[in-house]
Length: 60
Image (cartoon, rainbow, N blue to C red):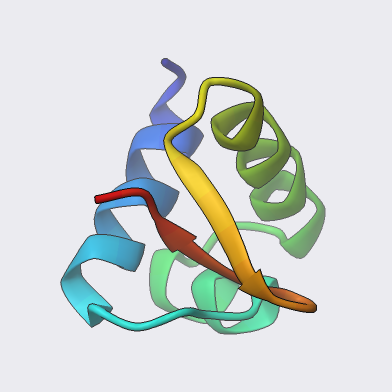
């Protein structure tokens, strides 16, 4: 797992609610494109889910 993926996952877990990539980018201070790329990788690994359109949350 890359540093960006770890930062994104940590931010999601800390918030405890589904989040938009833009909100995650603000919290992690990462570029929005880097956040989207990390989310896609985390989804492939089964660590992140999308409970509703454009919102993402860690899988419990």
